Image (cartoon, rainbow over all chains, first blue to last red; front, side, top):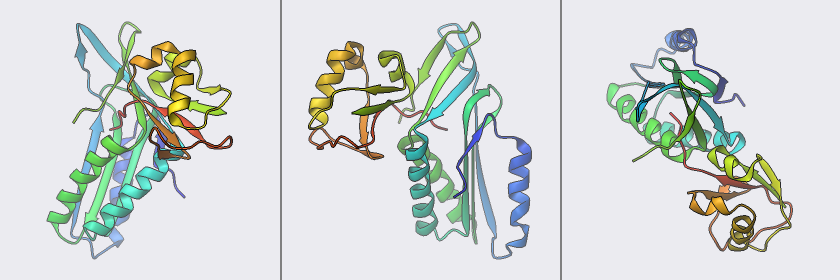
Length: 143
Length: 75
C-alpha cells in the first residue's frame, strides 16, 4: 500500500500532478483541497523557523487509511488523497495535502473539512517547533 | 517488555525504545515507568497496545507492541 507520508516539505509540483491525474475521471464534478503550511509563529519573542515532524508511523498509516475509507463512504466520494510530511519542513512550506473529489461540491467541501479535522485529532503525528535561535518546543493540536 | 517512545516523551526517557521488566496491565506499567522516569508524571500521554489505544485495565503480554504517545500535532 502507498504511504501517506513523504520526507520533507510537499512540493507544489506533487500537488499539481495529483490534480492533473484526475482529468481522465469524468464523473468527478468537484474537488476540494486543503494545504497545511508551516506558520512562522512568534512564541514569547522567539520565531519558529521550521517544524520537525515525526510519527508512530505504522499506527498513523492505519489511522489515516481508516479515516480516508470512512469519509469516502460517508460522502460517497469518487476518491480522496492524503499526504503528510515527516522530518523538517521550513516555515512557508507545505506539510499537509488533502484532496477530495466528488460529483457535486457540497460533498467535497464537507468531506475535506472533516478529513482535516480528523487527521489533526486522531493520527499519531508529532511536531517539534524549531526556533531561529536553535531552541525548540513541542506543538500540540488544540480543539 | 519493549516500549516504543515518541515525540516529547523521548526527552523524559532519553531514548525512543526502552526495555523494562514488564507489567500485568497498563496501570502497573505506568507505575513502573513513573518510578524509572519521574518527569513522565507531568506529561500528557496515552498508551497504545498493538497500535490501538489502551486503557488502564488493558492486560499486557510480553510480545505486545506497546507505545507511549504524546499529544498529536499533525497538519
